[in-house]
Structures are given as C-alpha cells and as structure tokens.
Image (tube, rainbow, N blue to C red; front, side):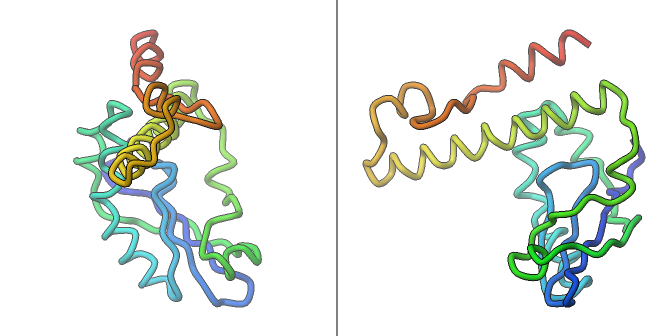
Length: 158
C-alpha cells in the first residue's frame, strides 16, 4: 500500500450532505454538509479509528498513513443526503482484490466489532446494566467476538 489515504467522496443527489470514506480502511468515514467539512471531519477521526487498526494488527501501517487523497467522486443515494452515510460503492471499490487484501479488510471489520462491543459493555457496566450472559460472553442477543484471537489465527496462516 502507498503512504496516502485513498478517499472516496460521495455526494447526495440533492447536495445536502457529503461523505468522505477512506477506501483502504473500512469503517473510517464521516459525513458533513460540504466536501471540505467531510474531509476535515474524517481527518479529525483518525485517532478514533486507531484502536480498530491496532486490534487488527495494523497499527504501524495506520500510524504511517499519510495525507488524505481524494481519488474518486461519486453521486450517492438518498441515504447520503438524509443520514450522511456512504451507501454507494465507487469504481475503485469494485476492482478485484487479492486474498491478503480481502483478509486485511475482514480483519479491520472484525476489529471494529470487537472494539465497539467492548465499548458497549464498558458503558453498560458503568450504569450497572450488563446482563449476566453479556458480562461473560461479550454479547447478549447476537454473537460478536470480544477478543482478536480469530484475527490472529487467520493472520498467522498467511
């Protein structure tokens, strides 16, 4: 991977909101009213995404990621205008990817779930609202891994 952070800009069809999404870092995206504001907000969330990269074993790669570089602009859907979320895929996201790149993105997505689950449990614990099963397994109504062991096992198989 290069040192730049490839970004896709998605503008809603009515121009109400714009989303900036880091193509190589799934889940790192932010929406705002203008492209400049979305890019500024995306950059400001770099530190919030760092724990996901760390859990996925990509901390050094993420820490050395350079400047944001807009590589594609697309028109989004009504969800882009209404919610300020990315709901369309650009041409760069439709390109073939190698198995290691696919596994890397899966690792990042799993790490995001692990981190958000840990945050949710910590928050619920602080209010004394953790269900017994949730305290033991890390989840209550659905199964979400709370440890990066599956990520580590897959990485060691490379």
